[in-house]
Image 1 (tube, rainbow, N blue to C red):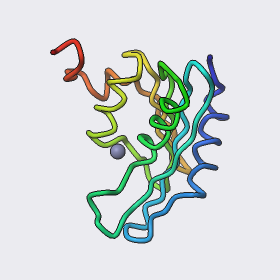
Image 2: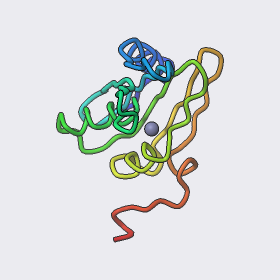
Image 3: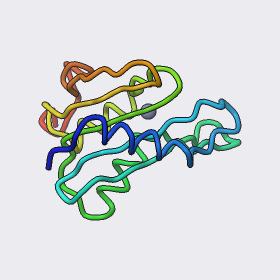
Image 4: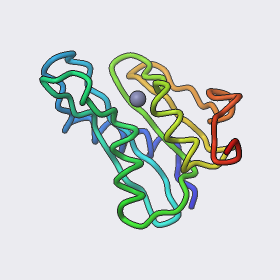
Length: 128
Ligand SMILES: [Zn+2]
């Protein structure tokens, strides 16, 4: 399944509306393309800060828990360029193809990278 880039970014931007970010006020939305469709997520913070979950992982876990087996595109949208954190890259490594497109966007910029560019030397199931 291939999605139009601007449409996928629009879905990430729309998902951001449901972000729960009362502590950082950094609201993030994500949309991922899987083998069974597109799933979205927003960041969800917690008073116990460490329990906060990023938008990318919310979207990926939503896809996997719905039965998806593979993610081929990830779009992330925030007010400033929301490059995925290390934890999200590690989760992407688990479920995304190495050539998975990672689209990072803010209101003025859009950058298209691959997972392998963002995480060139992964720890993966192949390591074990
Ligand atoms: Zn993250």
